[in-house]
Image (cartoon, rainbow, N blue to C red; front, side, top):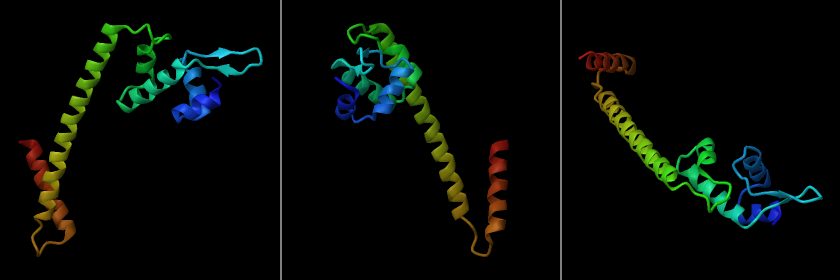
Length: 137
C-alpha cells in the first residue's frame, strides 16, 4: 500500500511515517522503481505498536531496540524484561508524584492557615520558615 493509504489507516501523517522510517523504527518498506514507497499490511500493525508503545512511556530508542524488522521475530525474553522494567519505572514515578503531591498539599495547608491579621508577604515568610525548620529536622 502507498503511504497515503497507510496514513489514513493509522491516523498518522505521512511525514510521521517517513520520520519513523528515516530513524530506522519502521523497517517494512520497499521502494518501487518510480521511487514510491510501498508498505505491507504489517506496517499498519507496526505503526500501531509504535504509537501504543509511546503512549505507554517507551522512547523511540527503546521501541527501536524492541521492534523486530519482521513482526514474527519477537525476542520474548527481551520484550518481557522491557515491559517489566517499564512497569517498575512507572511505579517509581507514581511514588515520586505521590510524595510531591503530599508536600504540595502540606504547603497549601500552611498557606491556608494564615492568621487573619497577617498580610500575604508575612504569611509567605512564616510558611517558608516552617518549611525550612521541617527540612532541617
